[in-house]
Length: 190
Image (tube, rainbow, N blue to C red; front, side, top):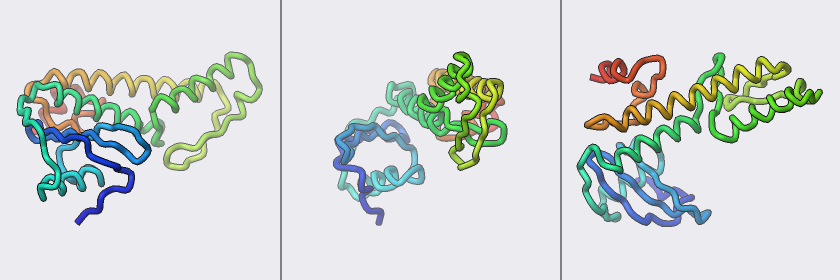
C-alpha cells in the first residue's frame, strides 16, 4: 500500500483519456497543480493516485478517449515542461534549463557586457554538484546558447508530437531525442 504523499491536501478531480489520467491536486501549500500520468511507475503521486482509483476511493470523471483531444495535447505540453525543468547534458554535465537557470546565465552575460570584474569570478554548481568556474564570456555564452537551443528543440518537438494522431505516450524518452527527427524516433518505437 502506498501512503498518501504528504504534500497533497486533496484531489479535486481525475479525468481519464484513453490510457492517460489527468488529476487536479490541491497541495498543502495551497497551490493547485495538474498532474498527468500514463502508468503508476511515473512518480509517487502517480502510484498513490492509481492505487486510489484501482481501489475505488477516487472517482474518475469523464472518459475522453479521443486521442486528438485537448487533454492529450496538455499531457504532451506538461511532459515538455518537465523536460525543460530537468534540463539536458551540456559538455558532459547535467544542466537545468528552466527559466531561472537560463536567466542566471543571461545575467552573467550582462555582467561581462557591462565590464564588471565580478563577471569573471563566477562559480556555479550543476544539478549533479559539479563545480564550474565560468571565468570567460565564451564559456557562459556556450552554456546559454546550448540551453536556449535545447529549450527551443523541446518546444518544437512538443508541437510536432501534439499534431500526431494518435498521440503516443509522451513519457517515452525516444520521442524527445533531439538528435533524431520525429519520424525516425517514432520508427524506433515500433
